[in-house]
Length: 188
Image (cartoon, rainbow, N blue to C red; front, side, top):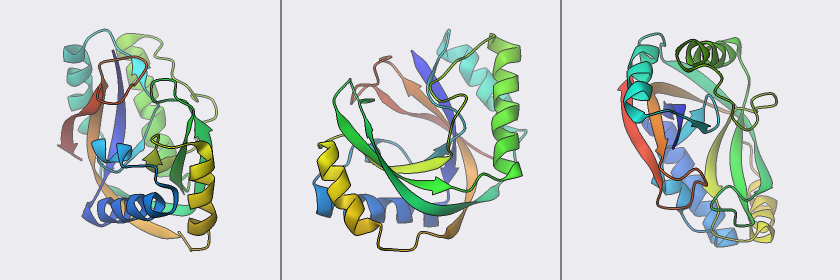
């Protein structure tokens, strides 16, 4: 089993992400897999956990350390992925500006996880780019590129408030559709 801890968007950002999801779908027919989760910015990609109870206890304490803050989006990205059950597909996201507040939250999370659980490696620990995914899986990478060519024509510079922390749970380490969800949410 795996987990990740994410900053959850306020209503404005949630609605904005859902609107982008629909717009991308209209151009690329990739579906709505990302609708399984609230719009969010991950502080770390999925990592293995010993059990959900200990992770939930850690999550509750970590949530007390954070305060709401704004995240500024800069542009959209598209890249190939096989994250959903190993299927070759794509991912489209809004890239977030790395701020000291965002980097500090990630650093404190990683330090806290190490102190409580020991090493918790995750993909992209060394090269993580903060982002809010609005489309993933459900179509070929070519479909994602087609949608990207239309969506890239707009300006994505916006700031949105993130005032909640989410604990995402993955029952299947391969992260196949239907095996993950947002298990818990706390106000920060």
